[in-house]
Length: 288
Image (cartoon, rainbow, N blue to C red):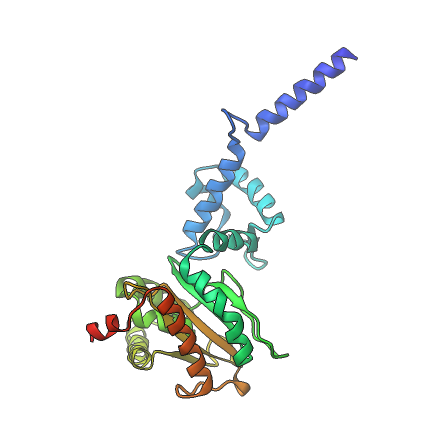
């Protein structure tokens, strides 16, 4: 009996060692798992979907070991695996943690107080996106009150060329931030060469001028053939662009007229948020 008890204690010790308890208050296996997730997050700037061997190499661990971690992360919603090619991307719970980490940001707090009423007044879904290394990233969504809704999700990366939010970011963000992502997006979406890139770039530049003049970006049937959207910039006390808000919905009900009711509503909300962030319109006037 004593021998069995001792054996049981030995097994507990062995399990603790396998779990990676090392040093006071540290769990090595947890740290290894986090390093793997961070590696995937950094790789996502290049492409959301990554191969196992690429993630393992970036994290500095064997592929077989990385696979075991990814299996657990998949079960817990930290990663997702593409059904077609087996590659991995960050999952819904990883996005949730990311949003929680930045939820204290002033722009998110200010927008989250106003988007519910914007959706209620307009009858359309509304959203807030901020700029990340991967491009415009959705961090807040308010669903529409209409029975027919078009949805997006927190953590979604929006295109620069074909989304209203992306076009607004393109109009005000520095070229050094925009160009690498834009070129990659255009090549992947349209498979075009240098001449095609110049044509698309010229088209976007024309939109950017209009967006700056109107204070509003728009799309009709771009990201989704049956969806239209309006987006407006949010400025802070430095005149920088910490976020963009948008409303979107089924095109047959959606008025994209820059002088229409929807445009007036979203501009008004964007201006309110900007004022709360300390923005003074003279910043923009001084730059003209």
